[in-house]
Image 1 (cartoon, rainbow, N blue to C red):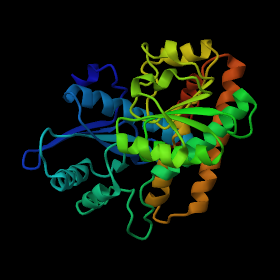
Image 2: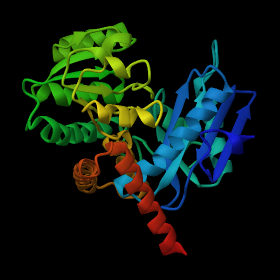
Image 3: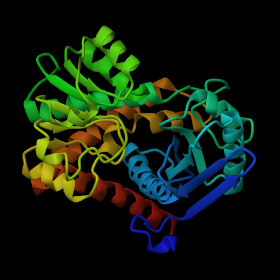
Length: 351
């Protein structure tokens, strides 16, 4: 039973959809609509099995509730995951079928890009449904939110290095970036421009060569990036980068990146804290993309509003660090407390 699943957290709605003609198999998880219709990206990934896909959907949707609360936007948390078929498949047919599946959820969830999904896929979805953002055409379109996510992560890391290292910029600092997708690569651009030395890891050789050329980056194997000698470790790939196998090798003073669910288990945050490592809660640090999506969903995209919200995220992160130090706990504990309090306050207002 899904209600007995370890990651089920009183989710309001979990929908399973399949379309044999296209090969679509997906899960749409709506964690909460207290703050408004849920919003979060859709992930297109090669899952080992349906149980893994369900775990990802449940965990990611709950994280979106926390992220959207901390970003102070009028949306609850939701997430979609599509199981990438093995062998050859018709990508357009899959995403068209996914758009029709979104209609059946009835507006409780709005999607945008996540890992493995592009603005082209959003256009295909949009032909079937209006419950979509991250579009590059239309009156309020803003395109791929990845660059805004990267901008927010960079601003947050600036707060972190000031707090932990008493540094006002990244000159003379080394940052290890795990994962050079759309967000990770854009983050490297910000860091390189700010004077950081970059050590990077990714599974794609062509992207690594680009990072060497564009950022003068050093390259290490994916399995070694967490343990390099650096000041900051920025996980920007999939979740669980900080786990029982990697935490002992982490040498940095700050962990913060764009990946969702960076802590494989809740105790990892406290373990980092006990080692004197400052953890930037991922759903605070990487909220730029969903802020951009919220601006688009409002029907009037205002870049100044987005910029103000990104500054607000940085201020929120600073407040999290302040409270965590005062309470002598990991910042993720404080961030979750703050996010849940905002959601609870909204519930009281609605009562």
